[in-house]
Image (cartoon, rainbow, N blue to C red; front, side, top):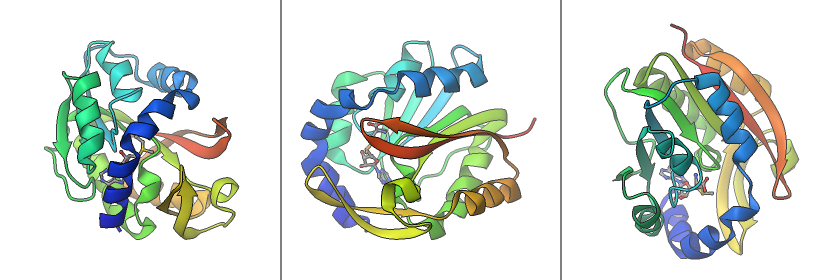
Amino acid sequence: MPKDLIAAYNRLAVDYDKNRGLFDMSAVLNDFYQHIKIDNGNLLDLGCGAGEPGPGFFISKGWNVTGVDFSEKMLELAKKYQPEMHRILADVTEVDFSPGQFDAVTAIYSLFHIEREKHPLLFTNIYNWLKPGGKALFTYACKEYTGKNEFSGYITFMSEKLYYSHTTPEKLYKMLKRIGFALLSADYRDIGGERFLWVTIRKPG
Ligand SMILES: C[S@@+](CC[C@H](N)C(=O)[O-])C[C@H]1O[C@@H](n2cnc3c(N)ncnc32)[C@H](O)[C@@H]1O
């Protein structure tokens, strides 16, 4: 990890994209937007994949979107679907942005591929990149998906063995609080036959 994950997503990109419609994000995105309530903001999407549906949703509302992904093949698709999105080919744990640059940060079905030991630094970075009052939405892996309270290992998804990592929701919330985030919502959602935890947090201000 992550070289094997990059290779897996490069192989998966076209098929993943063809099947992306099976995972309906409309409720997730509309609920998150209710928390934001601004037009024409700046969004950072971590693990943006093919730029759908998250970046597309925000672009259609007049937002500037920056998408980061380490899969070249995913970003090629994103270029086709969201030519306006600023694309960065990089590992999200290695990028850096100016403090207070973004109104919102999303990480949809992506952050669960990152070792949980790296989450405190990544969330600290997200905190710094957000404007005061900025919000973030992310998908978190949980026992209902991996079968364990805490997990780091491989699970087969669309015939590829992918790395997943998570701790318990309680430890996650504690860590987010320690960094300074307020927890706005944490909902288990069943989407496309998979159950994950969907978390919305806010930087005070
Ligand atoms: C399941 S796909 C989700 C893509 C998109 N967010 C969506 O909703 O369809 C996970 C994406 O996260 C990317 N990814 C996973 N770990 C990453 C990391 N550490 N840095 C950059 N991209 C990563 C993968 O390349 C892949 O495009």
